[in-house]
Length: 149
Image (cartoon, rainbow, N blue to C red; front, side, top):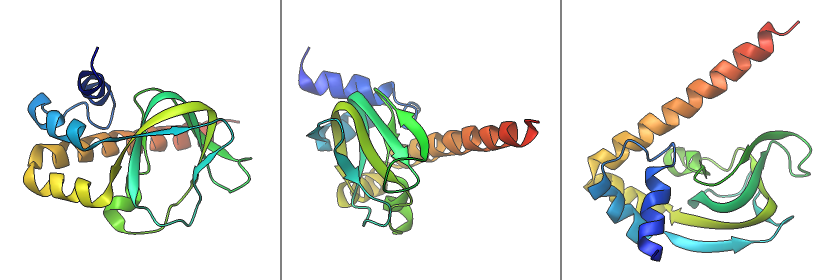
C-alpha cells in the first residue's frame, strides 16, 4: 500500500477522527509528518509547550502523570491520538508521553491544525466529537473507580 493511503486508513480508524468525512481526512493526511521513537524515549514532558499532536502508527506510548513514568494514565497503541488538548487551550502539556515499544508516529503541528479547522469545519466537529468521547470514557473510569469497595 502507499503511504498516503495508509495514513488515510489510520485517520479513519482513529477514535478522534472517525466521524470526519473521508474528503476532509485527505487534507489532514497530506499535512501529517512521520516521526520515529525508540523504547524509553520521551516524546514530551508535563509542562512542555504543546506544539503538535500525535497519532500512533505502530508501537506503544504511555501517557504518564509524572516525569518518572510511574503513574501511567493510559497506554496507547495503533490509531490512538494524543497531545491535542494543549493545541486548543494553549496550556502547557498536562502529562508526559513515554515510548514503551519502538513507535512510529504521525504528527500535526498547531499551526497546520488551526488552518485545517478554519478551512474545514467538519474536521473541527469530528475532533470535538472524538475528544468528547474520550472525556466520557475518562468520566466512566472515574465513576467505576469511585464505586469500587
